[in-house]
Amino acid sequence: MSEKPKTILLGCIADDFTGATDLANNLVRAGMRVVQTIGIPSQPVSGEVDAVVVALKSRTISPPEAVRQSLDALRWLQEQGARQIYFKYCSTFDSLFSGETRGNIGPVTEALMQALDCDITIATPAFPDNQRSVFKGHLFVGDRLLNESGMQNHPLTPMTDPDLVRVMQQQCAGKVGLVDYAVVSRGPDAVRERMRQLKAEGVSVAIVDAVTNDDLLRLGPALAELALVTAGSGVAIALPANFGLSPSPRASALPAAAGLRAIVSGSCSLATNRQVTDFIERGGKAWALDPLRIAAGDDVVSDVLQWAGALLPSGPVLVYSTAQSVDVKSVQARLGVEAAGAMVESALAAIARGLVEQGVRQLIVAGGETSGACVQALHIAQMQIGAQIDPGVPWCHAATPEAPEGGLHIALKSGNFGGDDFFTRAFEVLA
Image (tube, rainbow, N blue to C red; front, side, top):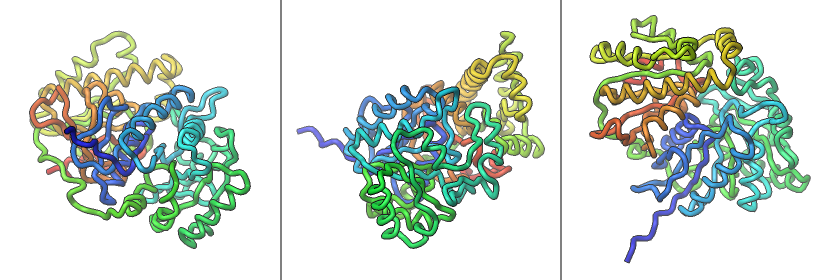
């Protein structure tokens, strides 16, 4: 008699790879045993698992394709018996914005709601641990409104409006409302009552204010009966308790780390720029990729790997395409936005694979698009989620053909996350 397939408590769909590990990290911290898959698996995950995060690369693709992929992920999660579905997007609420396309978050949310027969859900990118807060429906990054935080200059998904009700309404066919801070501060019963009021008014998606973790923890119990939750990763700290789970060291246990160390960075965010600068100022060895050399047909990948091979035994190396906004725009003007991004991603992915083939077993990848390209180049199908390095960024462990014995420890860092010394301190966590 065959063994009955395991069922999972929480099934998650993330719109990029670093966002997936960000979410998984918060679930692990709150006591869930989590596996992250790269794309939609062809079979059930193995081992003791409370939650599965399906990582898609759908943030910057067309809304119809993002919807299709998300619905495919939903069907797989339903087959695993997931009791609740979580759609995770970035804490800066960004997705494809081009021409008539106003973003993917709204279309994916409404498609999932329809598939789940869900008449109302919430939306909040609040993540106080990483200085993302929502107040009166407006998104702040630290003490700055979203459109003054640097995100207005993002090369792929610029955000120029901090009013999330307005942003979401542009993306949704249904009505968007607000559960404001005054309601959240009164606790779960007040949130439930406000949701009932909004539903009666025809609202299907409610933006929710949250300024502190206490706000998220008050919100959590009010979400227990929702078929679908949509949010950044912040709300995840409050959901495991709804399933009777609490923080436990065993949730984040990974195999012991060994091998050489390296960093591959494709993010051009302000945070990653500071991290690159900090690493170099500390004496770290670094190679700056030149997109124009790649476009000219130079074998930049081989040059980088030859350089790195001589230096890796003496400490971590950094390969980066990180640059200031004005420099990125200059390259994009010469090569085209999509062409420039694709060339750099492809080169960084090939470099990451080559570094692992040279013996790197502790690898940091910075940037959502870069992370997606690298894990695909490394043929990683799923990752076990481990301890947090900085809010939103855990170490993970994965099997890959390029590291046949012992696997690979890998950290996928969102461009906006992490302290200035992240690239140095991350390896100390594994020591």
